[in-house]
Length: 210
Ligand code: AP5
Ligand code: ZN
Image (cartoon, rainbow, N blue to C red):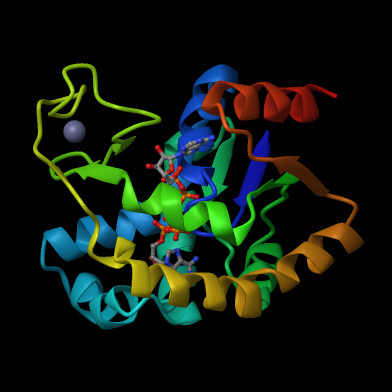
């Protein structure tokens, strides 16, 4: 099963992708995580992406398309995957179709803008593995460090309120048109993001099993 998870920044795509990929035994690929990893390692890709990302804008299509092409060629993708945060523009979706990648379903996790800002201010990510937490809704087990590796939890630079505003603007302008694109292909399903993370997972599983 090959899936795309759409949704505004902070709607909970990453959180849901983590649970859903475990449920179905597939892998989850986040272009955001790949780029952040490159940034941390100071690679050429990371340096190129940094200015766009820090400002809340999208990294140019050519760069992200190359990243995905390379990632999907790897062996662990053959049993199915979730693309979390890709495609983000219509040209990226067209490129994915041209690669011959067949997407079965596209899930939009829908959360209104007002709620997003609140969620983002409480998000913390692990400095080591990138795992994502929320100080109130998804705290780490010991309340302080990463469950996976004890890593230090930090706030993402692009989670600053002003930058979140810009990311939302970019989402509505450049990513939302993808809903029409996938609706035409008969692949779009909308799941309303719930207050409780587990409820959203339950609704998403229902959509995917039917
Ligand atoms: P990326 O990392 O993909 O960021 P994003 O889309 O902005 O998404 P987020 O990770 O911020 O949010 P999410 O929806 O995954 O929410 P989460 O589950 O963490 O991309 C970052 C940047 O990289 C982009 O801005 C761009 O520059 C670049 N980039 C990446 N892909 C690109 C592409 N294809 N093309 C061009 N550029 C690209 O949840 C948010 C918080 O809320 C968490 O703290 C979580 O614990 C909490 N939460 C989740 N669900 C609930 C709930 N139900 N109730 C309460 N809290 C909840
Ligand atoms: Zn960690």
